[in-house]
Amino acid sequence: MDRTTQLTARRTELAPGGRPSGAPATSGPHGTNPSGTRVYDPVTPGSLHVRAARVLDANWTGTSTVPSRGLYPHQWSWDSAFIAIGLRHISPLRAQTELETLLDAQWADGRIPHIVFNPSVPFDAYFPSPDFWRSTTAGRAAGAPRTVQTSGIVQPPVHALAAWLVHLADPGLSRARGFLSRVYPHLAAWHRYLLHRRDLGGGGLASVVHPWEQGMDNSPAWDAPLARITPVPARSFRRADLAHGAPEDRPTDLDYGRYVRLATEYRDGGYADGGGPFAVEDPAFNALLIASEHALARIAQELGAPGTARHARAERLTGTLIDRLWDPVEGMFFCRDVYAGDGGALIPERTVSGLVPLLLPALPRDVAAALVRTLRGPHFSLGDATRLVPSYDLLGEAFDPHRYWRGPAWFNTGWLLERGLRGHREQADADALREALLDTAGTSDFAEYVDPYTGEACGAVGFGWTAALILDLLHDHPGQGVSPTGTGTFDTSDKGGDRG
Image 1 (tube, rainbow, N blue to C red):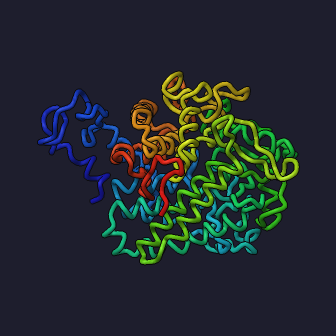
Image 2 (cartoon, one colour; image 1 turned 90 degrees about the vertical axis):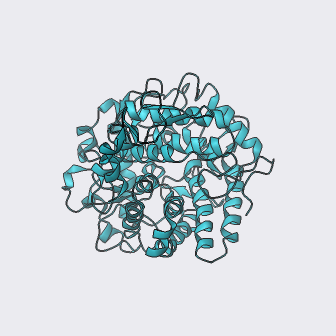
Image 3 (cartoon, helix red, strand yellow; image 1 turned 90 degrees about the horizontal axis):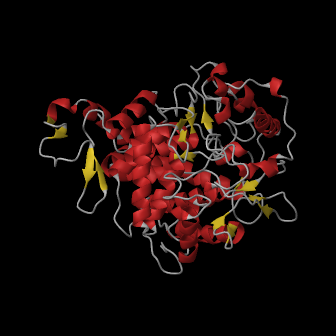
């Protein structure tokens, strides 16, 4: 019996008032601990913990977890990584299986596709469907698997970080199953692909070749590079997303026409990297690659190999990230349009992606402090006008509190920033953000994303990574100075953090 079943079956073990026998009473469903941090009751029927576990149980297919039964009926790459991070608290075996299923669909060139299609789901349930991507034929030269249909693009590399955290949840089970020894070669090949084949700007960072790869699909950061793309006619494709979400919350047909044009040209070029019309170095994508490189070093050490070279590479990449994407005047990171001008140019749009590098343990102290000031300032207003971090500049011309990645707050970026704040010892801000994430997830029915001002649910509800990351916050409240990601220790020296 895994923890999902245990938690939903424990009604008879509860003391009067709905708390476990011997547990301290709280005010209502939750209270505070001696330090003043809010404590959420983990086992009361109907509690946030049980509700989150039930979302993951409802979205479980037997080998992986769909983000949403209606809107997203397949397996998504970075969704599965975030989902595994939460699943480890209720079933480490399911969390391991989640990642193993995804990695089984890896291409021979090392890429992990952003969608692994469920063959039992009708083609018209999601667009672009398998017959659009044609991975087994168009991706043959790049080594697409022949026995499973996938997309041909990628998503942010959270996977090594997820694998390490899943291992830490039950090291005995992990070692007994050989989990790390089986996933390590896949993860190493994935990082090689990104660091070599995707260094399209020649500066050492990975580029995305489609907005969907970065995960923040409809961000205003893409508007300028996308303006070079001629959209396909809206009548040439059918959008399944509008059957499950309000049109005003979703990308426009014009945006979709450009997305489809880019994906079509990439497919028709055999999914070869380089030479396409769109290439952007994104701070969040590369920060997650760096965090996962630190995690991969820990995995190597667990397997008996030295992790020194990987830690050193992660630190070099942190320096490169600062050199190429940091704007000290604005106090945040920006995307770089690789094909703009001579050598590329920063895209002057403030998005949550530019704050995510706060996650990194080796970030210099002055950079981390500037990011925190920006997070609190008028463009994101955390703890003032907003409780959750908006995905885009509150003062930006393109801001929309409901439209996909153009303003709404997302729980995965909130989780990343909470981890970063806590790691850099901004405990009060981390505690406030944690509480806001927990409260908003509960009141929004684990929404895909929410209005950053009101918390109103947008997109799908019962969303996989929202439930998973809420479980992680409920279980894990790290102490000061310990990396919340388990990949190293943080330091507040001017040079930054983890050095080995």
